[in-house]
Image (cartoon, rainbow, N blue to C red; front, side):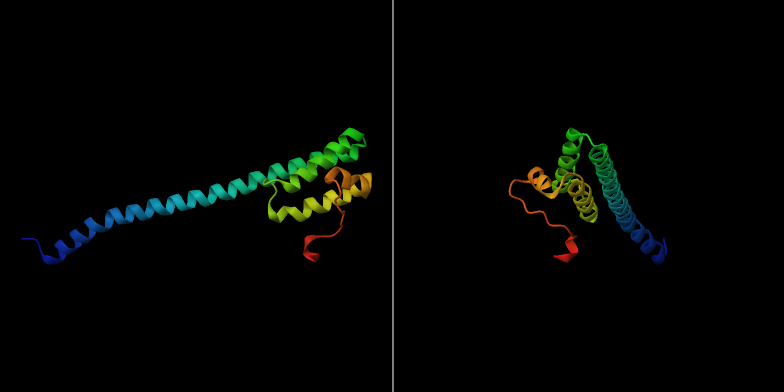
Length: 126
């Protein structure tokens, strides 16, 4: 005959092993999803900064078509889902500094949107 404590340990082990396995799988899935989200943020930031560098290079090159392409790229990037909230102020400041200083605020407003008012400053002032 099996002692009672061994029977209790056997039942607990039988019940707990699938639950522990399920918990391990759930924890693994959670950690995988978390790392995937972090990697996605990193990839978006890398692509954003690559586009910003390209646009600024185009604007500073001095070619009129390149300048227009750079400004349009920066403005489009500011409206896109690719730009993260943490990077918005940086891109907005670059757009204002490079585009307005390079081509003038009136031309910048024409490229950005018809009838748009150009306001310099960061979003913390709002």
